[in-house]
Amino acid sequence: MTPVRKKRLWLILALVLGVGVSAALVLQAFNQNMMFYYSPKDIKAGQAPANHDFRVGGLVVAGTVKRDPSSLDVHFDVTDLTETVTVKYTGILPDLFREGQGIIARGRLLPDGVVEAAEVLAKHDENYMPPEVADSLPHKPAEEAQ
Amino acid sequence: MAEFFHMGGYALYVWSSIGITAVVLLLNVLLPLQKHREMLRRAADFHELEGGNHDTR
Amino acid sequence: MIKTEAAPSNSGLFKLWYHRMASPVWFYRISGKLLPWLWALFAVLLVTGLYGGLVTAPADYQQGDSFRIIYVHVPAAWLSMFVYMVMAVSGAIALIWRIKLAEMVLVSCAPIGASFTFIALVTGSLWGKPMWGTWWVWDARMTSELILLFLYLGVIGLYSAIEDKRMASRAVAILALVGIVNIPIIHYSVEWWNTLHQGATVTKFDKPSIHIDMLIPLLLMAGAFKVFFAISLLLRTRNELLERELPRKWVKQLVEENDG
Image (tube, rainbow over the protein chains, first blue to last red):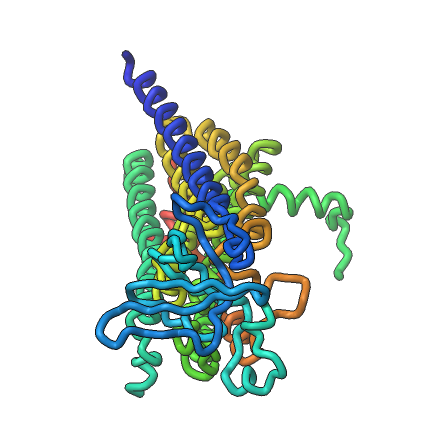
């Protein structure tokens, strides 16, 4: 093979590899997004899968966050303002996790109807303001946006 | 002042974001400037060789 | 305007401008004169933007001081898309009119765009860890931005892999134009899909949902980044020009001027 052809071959290989990797990443993203997003209402209606991971999203209900003083165990209720489901989790919660905050938990449904989360992520909205301004609003923007 | 550097406990995240940005942007001018000097040198060499008989007038 | 006999007509003026724009010597001289002004403008915007963002802007009601990462993250993310647009438009001009200068702008954009994309991804990660609780998720916004980085790297790689630089420019122009589909995907990903990344704050038709004291430094920083892009683009395009036109007479004159 001449050096020129060899170079072309490598070029084509690199291009194919690049397109392939990009396509795989897109599919990966789609897969994760298509991994069904269940609201507490869906879970109460028995629609959540019993044997594999899914995501549940909603607001953390005020006054339901209970931390175990001796470990990192925590459980709390998540609501879509219609139904409520309990999530338990072991680990460090993100800084934004607080009552009334929107969160997304990935995990499995236990037989007793509790979601055992492997991961808890906090979702914030696109509003940025100083605390004084947030306090003066009639509704907290974080809650309004959900 | 200490409070400014502390960034409400997020110093690591905020300052490393700014540091990485600064380094990447700095490279984006330093490398082209370095190459510019090299190009001018190469141009000088090239035209010196070509126009060598200039000196004899 | 002073009228002289030699004054060209309107269309003549346009032609003159058009030829000058594409003329390497003219570009080299004008950009050299422009650069100090751009540096000055960049310094002013950067200093005021950083001071505003890191010192005078109040902390966010939810995110505290960690939200200050916005002042490098968002300008870098905006520029990562803007540079791509400039690159693709240059690619189209290079393909259609075969203007050499457009080819040089095209290839000069890629490393700068890759840098901004890299900054957006890394600072996003540094912001996501404390706030969301994760360095990375495969959501549509982040994945499409990562693909943007690969597109830039693809342009750089493809250009360096082809020996004949005029042919390389054409190949790269096509790649840049194909990749442009990714730009609306990045921008609208937060609306089209259910992403962890929140929606747009400033670039939406509504009024920006950010307090004015936080917004002004952000716009200053965005301006600073844009001017920086202009500086870096001019520097790189000048190098590209020198490299391609090394044997030409104007380069010889330039060298002689430098010596004298």
